[in-house]
Structures are given as structure tokens and as C-alpha cells.
Amino acid sequence: MTDDTFQPPADAGPQSLIRLLQEFTLEANRYADSAGAQNDMHRTDLNALAVIMRHTAKGLVVTPGILRKELHLSSPATTALIDRLDHSGHVIRERHASDRRQVQLRMTPKAFQDGGAMFMPLSRHMGAAIAAFSPEELGVVTRFMTAMVAATIAARQETSEPGPASPATASAEHPPAPN
Image (tube, rainbow, N blue to C red; front, side, top):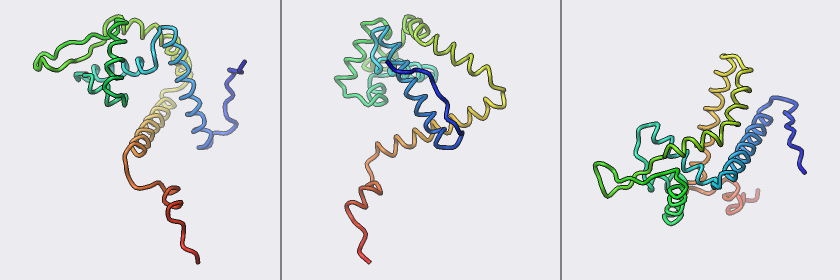
């Protein structure tokens, strides 16, 4: 049995903040796994619905190719994912109005209803936690989290792009010359 009691760090230095962000990420992942499991949904299913929702909110068409690219899936895995979401009643496939060859994906009312039910406890607890902060504090936290998301995206892009060897690899391949 594990102890689920959260212990905040003793200090508020940069390393403590990074550990807190790691802890938040871990707990958010655990929540998504738990909520998904109760609804027979994989983490990838939830991520796909989040991608579709984000693009739809921007007025963009969502295609299987967009899901494949954003979720880093193979074409067969993308097809299996869309089949699962279609079979569960969370997504429908439609032909694009101007290009009938292109398939677009849309979330169904059931997806919104199930998603709301899955994430309502998290939303309720987070809302209560947020209510304890002043607008000024929330402004600082919002700036901080925006910077952390941007930093995480930059790190992901850096690690996913082929490029020169990392400093550790470079030094192992080319040890310093003796003095």
C-alpha cells in the first residue's frame, strides 16, 4: 500500500519547483489513467480527444493525419485508434465538404458528456484550490505555467530533432586532448 499523502517541499527554490512540476505531471497522468480505465479508454484515446477538441476550438479541420502526427503514431495505430473512438461513440468520420477524398474527425455529444463526467472530479478539486488564490497570484502562476509549457515544448522539439551529438555524447566520442 502506498502513502498518497502529498508532502510539499520545505523550500520554494527552483529545484523544489521542478520537483513539484514533476509530481503534478505524475499525478495528472495517474488521474488520466484511472479515469480512462473506468471508461475503457486508453491514454492515447484521451489524448486524441484532447487534440480533436483543441483543433476544433480553433475552427480547424481534424484529419487522421493530424492525429498521427501529433500523437506520433504509425498509420495502422492511428486507424486502430480512430476505430476504437468510432466504435465507442466518441468520434465520427465525415467526408470534408470541399474535398470529398479527405476524412475529418468530429467529437460526438457522447464524447463531451463522457469527458465531462471523467474530468469533473479533477475540475472540481482544482477549482477549489484555485479559489484560494488572489487574482494577482493567479496572474503570476499563469505566467509561470505558460513559461513551463513553452520550455517543455522547446525541450521536446530539441530532443526529437536530429542534430549534433549532445555534450555528453560528444565528449565520449572525442575525449579532451592530454595537456
